[in-house]
Length: 223
Image (cartoon, rainbow, N blue to C red):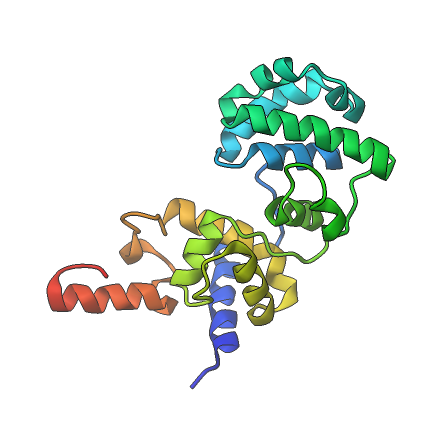
């Protein structure tokens, strides 16, 4: 019987065929701190909306100093459509100030240093580490949490626990691909509600889909 690591490798082989193996980022940015800010804005907000906001935001605030010295109420208004705008604006302003005062205006690569910045948790830190510094990292968002569970990769529920669990099971050269692959799969097929298992290219390798088929055959319903 194949081990879990072997099963995950087989699943990733199929994901690689479907999505490729070049890491990509859904948030638009040019400077490292811009990705940090965009990721802060992405909490409970779509990447599409964030990109619409940052297109003008990074023109209006062209430097790290301009964010650190901005009028907080004005920044709140500028990012209002991203939701949670009061806390996000306060964190962006404070994080910019901290980068200037504590890191000479540079975004650090160390996860412990990154997570000391206001508004920066492990998800945001790992996005930056993956795409700015090319450091193998696993980003756990709602799609990764849901789809990795359905694929049988983990039974854990907390994002940090899932991150460390997947680090033990997925080979390191695919850590950076987990987030983009499972986001794509989650957005297009593996929806939280009414997943399109019958249309999914992963269904023959997915224990959750197989379980659903058995349940449907026996009772007409999905577990």
